[in-house]
Image 1 (tube, rainbow, N blue to C red):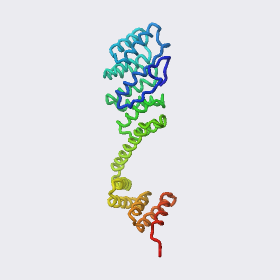
Image 2: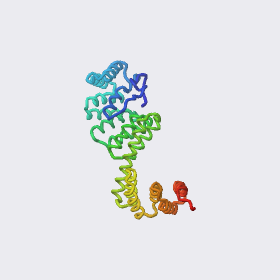
Image 3: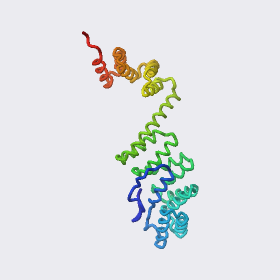
Image 4: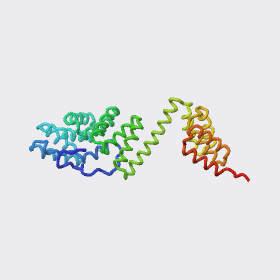
Length: 294
């Protein structure tokens, strides 16, 4: 996030602790309050500085009093409303926090922090579409801001927008390629996406070749190969021209030493996709496994 002055109370180092939810995120953001000395009247600078210190120390009542005083005495700027919003957020008063973050955004639309915090409060109150819009705006403003993308991924997951969640975790892996947590979250998001895709296939076309194919692959992964073969065959009956079905059957037959059946399936696969490298490689393996004539 962009800072406005010489003190940022934690902006210089990104927290390394894992974020397990919106409230933990907000607790970390307490240490990332913006200090903009040049935007405040000189008489209010010390009051604001005391408010920041109280907020970081968890003295929420004192922080609230300080920030309200700054606003009341002429320091009506975006970052003061943002800090007051954090104070209310930490008190669990999301209604007042939302009002403060909205005012911060009104005064300074390109300030990413209140968009993130507003999104988190909206998530906490179950207002998923509104939260998503704010967090998408935060990502537009600060594409490399980890906290914005983490919260947006959470919003997408809660909205069952699993492709969107995958996109955010992929971006996080690009921003921090050596962080294993983001790679783990990306893998989890891909699993959720696969489950969602299968449910959509079953909902839209429960007897389609793709529905049978996914089911067969699941049985194969479980080691129930005989069941998988029967369902792959049903997939081939549903769509004889679908690539991948005969390839899978050929692989299974080869694993079971059934080279005649494997060759039959791989020839059907190559008739559908003659350019398939995987099919041609498997055809060579089948030829090597076939009994040699005496």
